[in-house]
Length: 474
Image (cartoon, rainbow, N blue to C red; front, top):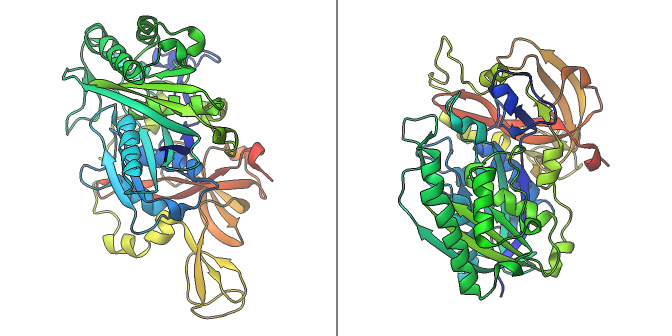
């Protein structure tokens, strides 16, 4: 049995911050930019979006494990992988694991999943790598950071790319870090980190892998190399003797350094264009370095087209100004500290978690009508207590009616509030990623998992809706 990647998905926030805005200038259309999570997005919501795309067309009951990799999980003590399993409506007995503490967490998660499948302890494992790192406003790191997520379904059959080998090494060095009370990432002198850690360790890891596999750099079809900037990335490529056409575009000036999700996102981009027989290499860096190789199989051409990295990069909207961005990300000082009240009752959260997190409605067994939220009596045929669960999170819908709410607290007023019909059920949802003047009744939309508010010192999540892309409409 050859262990490999069965499916994949990616998510890049459509919001783009022009790098010119960081210098106080107007956004430069067509100039360098980075992808930024918006006010209701974080590592969890980005990861859910990538995972939903990864699982599209696959039986969710076949997933035996979830590994979530991130350096920016919203909880110090609460497992994010378990939250994802609930949101994605996976089996109750699914095994869940969080990995963090290093920018190599995403690639570590892939090997962890591959080892579990190869050992026979799981049939399929969902790996999600997601990061939303913040650098201090005006700092050198702020220019390079970007946000995004990638997800992979790792299994032992029908793999679109099989793992050929791994090589990793640890290296203790003070380069970038964030303490338990730090909101922003700190960084040491950039040249020192590049010269003493990134370039030599990445080159060493890749060479070690090639030696272990008995192949040369010229045998690689595509090399996805994580890097802090274009110059350092080029130094590694030259040291390894890689030709320009072998390099996966690192997306500097378009995506940004997405932390633990950076190398996985580059792998997803490489899979978008992979053909049977291609040999792919992925390298990541952080407290050391590691590299692994995959061989694309004939199944890569049979997989239903994904919403890949290029698809997401093409869907973009520019932030009007740096001040607009700071307000959306909560980087401005305010009169009140956010999330300092007692928050939502844990009892209510527990009782309503199927509806709030998984967007589970109910289907009447007698007449087939779907309703949300759950209730005892069917509103169509009046049958009582005769329902089965109906997941709505992976179904599209249409706006029935809407209103523009100018009072709901948001950095981007007004809030578009809709009644949306999904599979026959009418659901109260906020609409995002759309200008108020573009909203219309009958608009095709799809559910997206987002932060709804932050109270009790923790984020609270629910589903919203966004316009369905034209290429996905029936």
